[in-house]
Image (cartoon, rainbow, N blue to C red; front, side):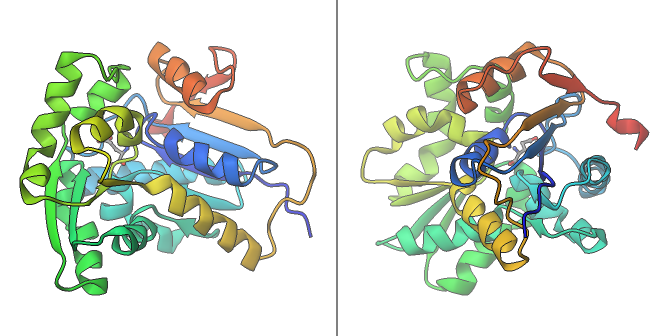
Length: 272
Ligand code: DGL
């Protein structure tokens, strides 16, 4: 049976587009509704109460769009506010557990780095799950607080000294510990892959949470017989809580689609 309802994806801003990109690659004929809370980004420095409140509003917005599944394409929401999923009438996929499995599979020297927001690191979500699967694994955590505004501003050029130095400082503890795998535990960070790869070197595996999450989305839809079996390319709609030029620019580059002021719609998320 074909279920043409869209997959709902949300994040605090444009970071979740790195997850959307993987889902679109794997499931090109699915319709997608994306919500980026650009008016309230960042989430990663806020209290649990605020993150839970924001997550509920984001989920409500997507439910109003009649989505068949919700993806929290945000490491912070996945780590701190996954409980909100219990209230949802549709399946919910978070980004942490799937990426942890990929990292545990990838590491050879049992040293894994986690680069995420401070709320995610404080929750210990990745570390706890890694330790369950690989108890003797050394986990090196770093909160890349300044990297989120950097990405939102479009400052991602590998040749930019400010970008390079800022990223390097956050990665230093991982370089010192000799990790062979780094989980990009915030969905904004794959946008900085070139910089992170250059700093960590070729021998280090970077885990993009979107890759494993896309597979989980496909599996979930398949199991509930809710894949869209239409042969047409899916429609993608983009909503934000504040229209910013950087969202349109980064989204266009990242998704290789023409996303401009006419394609992105602003919504009042606070009213939900
Ligand atoms: N992209 C989000 C994450 O994966 C949130 C970044 C933020 O808003 O602080 O954690």
